[in-house]
Length: 486
Image 1: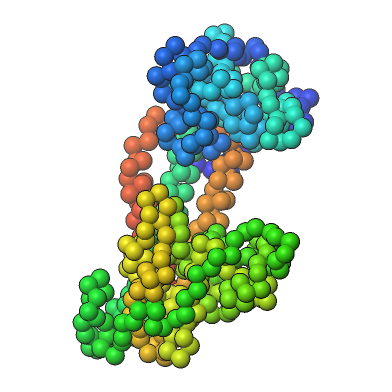
Image 2: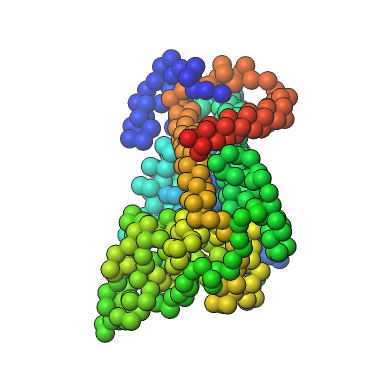
């Protein structure tokens, strides 16, 4: 579905509204109060499904979101809504905090609930697309009153005075039909791109595992000539000339105790925090490090050096334990922060880049997670970190592995970035298209009339998208292998 073949309406007239400008000549401009009436029905039991308003999805069951705040002991007295009702979070209407519900349930008493009047000749699905459109958002911002954006509020009276462009019922049906068909196709394209990203990220994990455990010789792409038993159950066999060493024997471990506080008696520093490590594989000068203070002895001991590997040591989530990052930038005032461990490799027989890659292998990382202590919060002891074992090839082979994985990583990231840009463009296109259609900038009546009653090829198209995704992956991996081996 593309807007490229669509044309404007034959004739327009001025709407008198800055956000709407011209409107099709035969469309009506109606005040909200002639279309909606306020509904203030309350739950007597509080047992109905609890709903909330998502800026991305509109009205949805709360248990389908990550919302955990504002839980109440009882929901008796909360507002009821039914399918077809417009629900508005009065504090967040300006940020797409509204939508037409497809559910019967209860919402916060701070929400507004509105129902289309019997004689208003307005379809709830058309209303949903209109009020959530980029164009109508201007009207919502103007009508929400307050000093700060976080405190803007849209009152019932203000919303019901808002102007709404409305075509005939038959035209609303055509618009809804067209937008639903377009949205299905766009979502399929987005799912295909998201699947490609997942496959590329999985390919990256496989490459790291195969390289750092000796499953393949990165110089040839083939297994090594001979293997031996590693003595480690999860590792199995390793190349005959490799070793398996504990972290304690190949790197100096320092566990930071430098917190985020600023104290007058201490020296000013910049702090590399847990989130800096968790969200960045490489610690470089582009990161906005937090200002803090530390004692001179702490600065001396925990000042980072290029080639250090930082490791997440504590977390509320078991899977976030042992995430590594390679330090590529250092400064006299840059210090490793609390909840992190700092590993300084022995350069005589350990390459820093290899240590980073080895610790990034899922099997190696599992050793950290198994060793982590805690119930609601997990932490690694010094002994647990020092006891972790990694496969260790000769330094020359380590550096070859690092070069291979760095090249492969650049190639994978380039393809992931391209897919992410395409997803962003698809979403931007959908946003612009909806705004143009519901405000009459594009006439979709003929396009909607040509659509089949159902989409019989939907499942086949989904399967075809998956096949195309797999083909794109194989092409990507082929290109990546050529680049990595160059």
